[in-house]
Image (tube, rainbow, N blue to C red; front, side, top):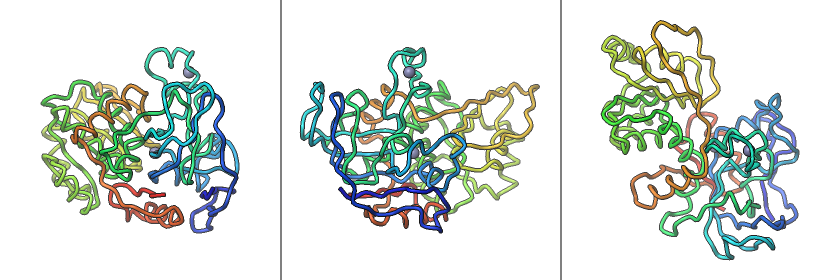
Length: 337
Ligand SMILES: [Zn+2]
Ligand SMILES: [Zn+2]
């Protein structure tokens, strides 16, 4: 099959990715082979490809096929697979497998399982024509959702949904989304469904325009100091959700959220000093468990949420990543295979 291979992590400018022909994968007993329709291009992929996560042991193998938001069709099933058939349309999220028997797995926090495998980081992912999926971690994808819109549900979708769940009951609360990109624009949609008043904060005018189209109640440019100061003075933000990959933005969120409020962080950042007297709550958030993934697919099938995407061919993966690096992608790049 044709695949995009990472052989040696380095800056994108040094061309670490190669389009290669590799052997077709074969499913084990509890696995299926999926012919890929589309795979989203995530900032996490960029971090791994550029070697930012080597210290964390990511990628866990080389060469590796990146990509972890995948939609396709089952073309072959393992001997013990009983819940999927050839022809089923399915999706894979970053959580490729979990141990199923640790306390995290047993309490609905399986994204924290210490024995989890991550699609495209510890096992081969979706920048290819085929991918192997574990039966227990596959989801049926409604035919009505186009592939290019379905793929991002499996990372930005679940990631944003899990973050909003962490916010708790936000009905009638004021929720600020810091960073309106691939995940942020989904978080905005989920926050609206949950009944929050939404405030989109971004330095990118194009991203603010998208936020406005998606129904954000307020859109504030991150460079507009007086508007930000006003939010702080009025103690106007109950909850801040940070998906902008910037320590400065995370620190801004920490300062703007009102005393006793929540700051939910889904990116690697430095949070700076922390004033305990304001009793703010800081929560990390990462992808999400299977039950929540099902709920995301349900909401998408009902037309209540919709990722905004830009399609690229598999061969154009390096170009899509470069555009992402330069901030030129409007919401989400998706490779259409
Ligand atoms: Zn991702
Ligand atoms: Zn586990």
